[in-house]
Image 1: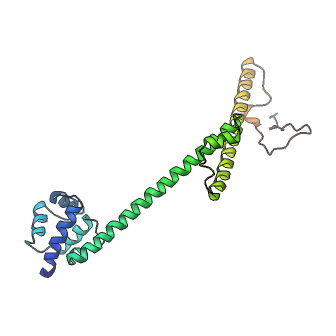
Image 2: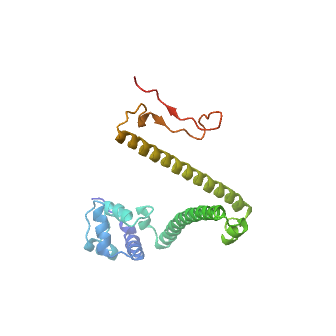
Image 3: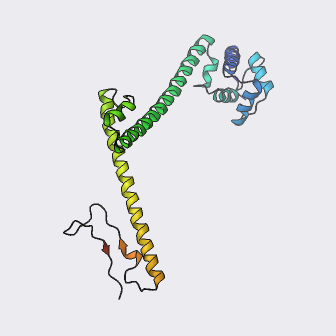
Length: 224
């Protein structure tokens, strides 16, 4: 089995122990991580490698690098000063990524809060409260900058559109419920129905209307 050159064995031992301790892993925990990757390893193996009692096998070095989440296992063979610079860079790269993820999550949460705030402002206005009162109560969050002012208009428009959609859906559901009640009453009365429930199609806001502006309900012709 190929092993690393003796000249880098000392570097490997120093860097291995330093990295393991920085990551808060015991020798047994690191050995378990390595075994999870399919490489045979024990706590005694890690101890021997850290003490420099033997050179690591190539397969061990590769598995250890992966278990320690290093950029490359070969960095374990670098001089400690070089290795420290490389691992510091890795640490701050990961930290920057973590903070970027948190920032994106916070931005998404703030956007959701602004949307809900816009809904609340619109609801207050619909309840008869003044625009000045509602926007003042909002604490100025919808009018902080020119960009946010534009965002405010978008959010308010979105709130209005959603409320209109909800009202339209509510009315349609109410119409369907009433028709079902009427049809059920007629069926229970024993009166034969020329128009069946499935023949009725509710019209939308863009459907045709009669000369009095009343929506036309389309009914399929009854079967003869």
